[in-house]
Length: 95
View 1 (cartoon, rainbow, N blue to C red):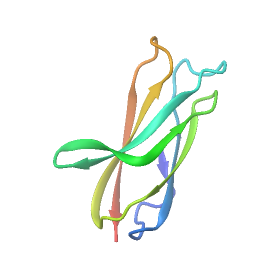
View 2: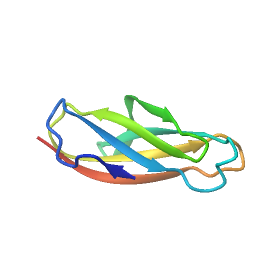
View 3: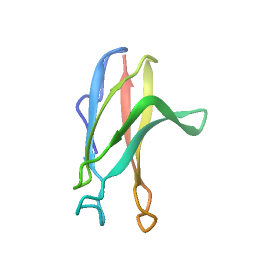
View 4: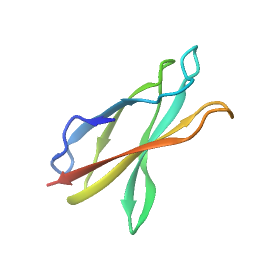
């Protein structure tokens, strides 16, 4: 996963891109959602959920309002009971 900006301003849009790896392909898209760490627990960011393409690639736009250090993760929930859940973290400094 990569963030287009790791020091976004409050209210400024940035993009998270990446690829779910594994046996996707062959038209087996998945879903990714963005979560933020709050009080020691990861919670979903409202509206930050997208489908991948058949190769597992994703692009999700995010806008954060709360300033300060933030930890986000992208969680993949591939379609299909034989596919595992995966996640990646990124640290940001929202100003």
